[in-house]
Image (cartoon, rainbow, N blue to C red; front, side, top):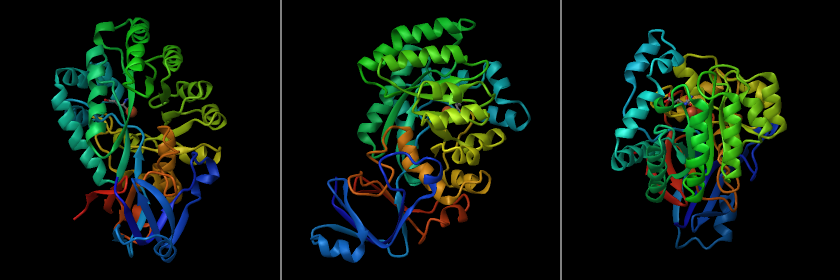
Length: 415
Ligand code: NIG
Ligand code: FE
C-alpha cells in the first residue's frame, strides 16, 4: 500500500465502473503527458502532469518518470485453470497428429488425466507451482486472475485446489478470484451416472463451499458428452441459491445452447462461445452477460475463433482471457491474445484493451474496483516500453511490459 506518482506518461484507459457494451468498447481515454497519483494503494487523481504536480505535495512520494511510455490498467485474466498437477504434452502431440480434444477425453485422457495427477499432488506442490505460474502472469501485466478448481472432482481435491488459491491470494501480489468447477467432467467413480454426480455436488460440495466462502463463482463445462444442458441448469440454479455467482463454459466444441442458458440465468459470464448461435448471442446482449472469449484455446485446438465482431455489433460486452490450462491451452500469452484478436478476430486495439481490462474485471465482478485508471480504483497499472498502445499488437507476440504496479507498489520490472 505505497504512495506513488507516475508522471509524463501517455495514459490510455477505458473509463467507468461498469462493463462496456457494444460500441462503448472502443472508447478509450488518452491523456498525453499524464500523471497518476496513488495513495494507500488507491488512485487519488489522474490528470496532466503539471496539474498533478501543482495540486499535490509530492515531496515524500516515489516518482516514476514514464516519459515515452504508455500506461494502461493492469490486465484481468478472467478465465484460467492454473492449479493442477502434471502435464499433457503427449496429448498435444496427438492433437497435432489429428486426434481431436473430445476423442482424447472419451479415451480417458484429457481432464481425467489431469484429475489423477492433481489428486496425487500435495497442497505444497500445487502451491509452489501456482506461485511460479502467478509470477509468470505478473510478467505479462496481469494483476487480477480468476482460477478454477475442477481437477479433483472428488471433495478433498476440489477443496484442496480452492484452498491453495486462497493461500496464494494472501501471499502473492496478484488478486485471485476463486471459482468452483466441480462440474468440469463426470469423474470415473460416477461413470454413466451423470445425474447422481451432479446431485452429489448439489447436496454436499456446494453448501460446504458456500459455508466456508471457498469460492465466489460456480462454473460448469456445459457440452455434449460432458455435462448436459439440463444438468448444467440444475446445478447453476442450486449454486445461485447458495449465493455463488455463475459462469458457464458455453458452446466451446458444439452449439449446445450454453449461451442461451447463460442469458436465461443471468450468469455473470459465458465463456468460449466458439459455436454460439445467433439467438445465444442476442440473449447474452439482452441479459448483459459478459461474453468471455478465449482465442488461445481456439488457436491451440486449431478451431475457428469466436465471432467477436458479431457479438460487439449485437451490443455484447466482450472480455478476453487466457483459459490457461494443461490440456486445451497450455499458454497464457497476453501478447498472443492481443495479436490474434486484432489480426484474426476483427477487434480494434481499443476494443481489445477494454476486453482485457474493464470487461475482464466485470467478468469477475470487480469492475468497481479495478480495470481502469481513474480516481477511486485500485492502483493496478502496467507501464509499457513504448509510447502508445498500438505497439501491443504491432510487437506481435512479444511482451512489451516494462513495469507492473499493484496497489501502488512496483511488483515487476522487466530488466
Ligand atoms: O476451458 N473446456 C473445458 N475446460 C478447459 C480445458 C480443460 C482441460 O482440457 O484440462 C477449457 O478449455
Ligand atoms: Fe476453461
